[in-house]
Length: 312
Ligand SMILES: NC(=O)c1ccc[n+]([C@@H]2O[C@H](COP(=O)([O-])OP(=O)(O)OC[C@H]3O[C@@H](n4cnc5c(N)ncnc54)[C@H](O)[C@@H]3O)[C@@H](O)[C@H]2O)c1
Image (tube, rainbow, N blue to C red; front, side, top):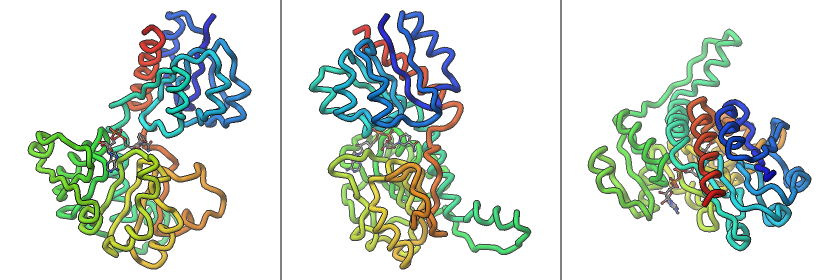
């Protein structure tokens, strides 16, 4: 019987319907029951020639791993970001790859907006202080009328832009490939192709683009130095978009005010990581898509995508 490997940790919560879909189609399911993202070594151990499909989370499908799955025909991404899949190798091996577009964009957008409030009002530290029976107040910043630069106007960026307009923010999308004029008109959002303008004018800069060779460390020392000293940086996309050493310097010397991320170059970060320990750096543990609604949609859509690819 042909087998399908299912790696995402959170798939466990909504697996009933997708597993029925896979079993009805005649596949045996190999589950990741470790509760953790699989390493290259663990994936290599699981590799057998009869695994023809993988539903993958953020586990590394490197060249070495793909070569070990000799019978693999299709990879279905449980989510959107494909940077953990060696797409070149998959293409070379004739493996179909598809992501689950439009399944988690609302959840990630809501988190990005939540992190803006967190940065503006320092909610988590203030709440923690009150738990210690302190009654100190930190002066906050309003979001209304602030300039929001949205880098990447795709599925998530657009949802962030819409919500930010609801908060009466001035929203500009920077995305060289954006071509949805109707969206700009409907939500009164502007668009620029001038990268540095979008950096310099931002009271809040939020990242919603993929990490590629071109976008790795897009936010580096030079760019951070051109931001307003009062600026807030939000990154719910990928850790590699930001040069973390440069961000540490910028937050320490006041080049920007505060940064909040849901992603990190190494997840989880090493114990004692200096950036994580800065009071004006906020990190959540990659919870952008971790809502009941998104998990259910990602599980069903990634399963449907896998079945479609295997049946094609
Ligand atoms: N935190 C999480 O849990 C979580 C969940 C889902 C997605 N993500 C990440 O969010 C990011 C965006 O996801 P999405 O679903 O909106 O993807 P998407 O493909 O719908 O949109 C990405 C947008 O980025 C634009 N873009 C590409 N290169 C660019 C560049 N150099 N400068 C500016 N814009 C550029 C594209 O034109 C596109 O409009 C991805 O990196 C994804 O990995 C994170």
